[in-house]
Image 1 (cartoon, rainbow, N blue to C red):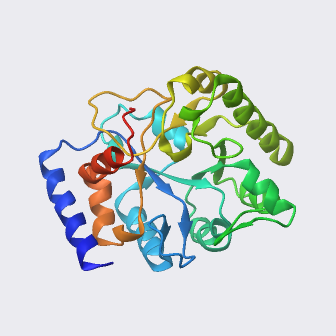
Image 2: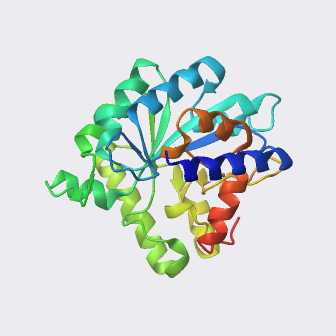
Length: 264
């Protein structure tokens, strides 16, 4: 990690001291592990392994529905949910063996167009490679993974009309059901951006829906507006603990503003 990025992250962590910590379980967002892309969404293998061991020693990793059920209970902030977005190949090749060895449950939100392409031998987009349905079903067989929906083409739902939203969700759900036998109960908004136009449709189809970075709330959140904490390459070991404690909420607030997002 560069000196500048480390200094900025240190400043954000310090700012968290003046922001009340989020309440309830910590829902963590992962995308990729160990591909060497140097993207912030691509966590190093050694860091990921250390993070899992730290969680095993200091927190309780649970499935999403358990976390939601216990959200308002005392001590629920020690519960952690691991979620993986999109469906990258390295989940199966790198992260899954570590999760399996530690018996840690996780939620996988699939953007189905990517998986369909991989199944037809075209699952490469730039530096990214994606899971096949065979891999998804193998992980499903472990009993550790909950398969959720993440739309079909990963479009920002704020920018399309209701008809297109319904098509995105229906196509995704139908493919997941056909390929895995699972009717998705959980949904992740692409980019973490909530859409008022999509909200009603999402509530019709799913038990929960998750957004992007955490926000401060004294109340248990609505089940279709659950916030998650994005784990980044620059978190490493030092800032991972800060992420779990305070959410690095100042950092996320700035990121939301820079991206022009004003939603929940």
